[in-house]
Length: 190
Length: 344
Image (tube, rainbow over all chains, first blue to last red):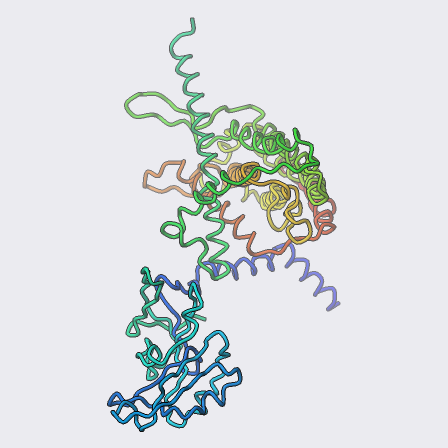
């Protein structure tokens, strides 16, 4: 008897297209919902969380001295040997010690962004930043020198991250760049 | 020497035919955009976005691409049929619109002339439309045959089998409407549904909704749209009957398909939703053509909505639905409608 009732109910459901209507409501709900597509790079850009490991950056103290003491621990720790450090003696006060890096370069093509150099660094000089736009038209930009890495990064380490920031897409002869506006951010939908 | 009113009539018909043809040629452009936009939003994407504001110029970009593409005719294809097939698919799709009314007579202000919003009010209108839209299938079958490719051939065969199974059910569904209106003319069918929403055929209980669902399911199968798009089933047949087509020939097939979708939407509105009649009396002077357009737009949206909701049926399921459910149901419904007409 109960079985019959179930079968009749099933039949009525089929005749009234209940499953079909259910499906249609689901898709209609999505149709009117907001899209999750990021309008990158024209209008917005994803700013990753702090844990993100992007291009290396060399930090300075608050007074502007280089934190790197050219101890070469990062290049020793590197599993792919992509970091080259050549130390030199310097007493002009460029670094926090007399020993500073003459050359500190990283080959981004070989780097696997494991973050071991970060862990090895005794002075927290080398950090992996949140810079991830690495595409370029020739191989010259794949090796980053000390001078480039010492420049301040777009997203400072103090910034929380994990948001979509308004951005500006800049084209120039030297290439393309996406400039983020960290004061104008929104949470990621879904 | 014919008098001036005859000449005027003649010129008017040519102008009307030209306008309808131009609108139909232009219609797939916004429809492709709309379809991709709806697909995008249902899948929580944006759809076309980069070409023009909100991707509005995307159809033009597509059109230019299709025009520029190399027009390939396969080496072992039947050259003549291969070229003719897209035209055979397209011409009936256009010809159908000769009998479709878009509204009643409109009085042109100033000229004091009554303009009819249809090319011709045939006394066998609905029969003509069913016959013409049935001819379109030849393009698909011949295209599939002439390509000399197994995918195309299977697509064409599926298409013909589908047509035979579902055309019957659709015709029976239309018979019900004809029984209600006592006429085959589409203008008369709409007139019979005059008044408010309660006079529409969809609300002729209990048979109206059944007619409507049979008609909708059958015509979805006929215009090869999901969930019955087996002739161009990407999953198993590459692209079905138009696998070997590229460039403008492919565009003609797509054009025919979109126009067929519009035709079915228009027919659904005329046969079941009261054509250009307003659903309830409104004190505002809204022109009847607005109601007609709004209803057709809803059905076009419905077809796209369904496309991105349902998966595709298996081939044997398709045949089962056609022969074992729709056909007996429509026969019973013909009987029921006849009895209701006799004794109610």
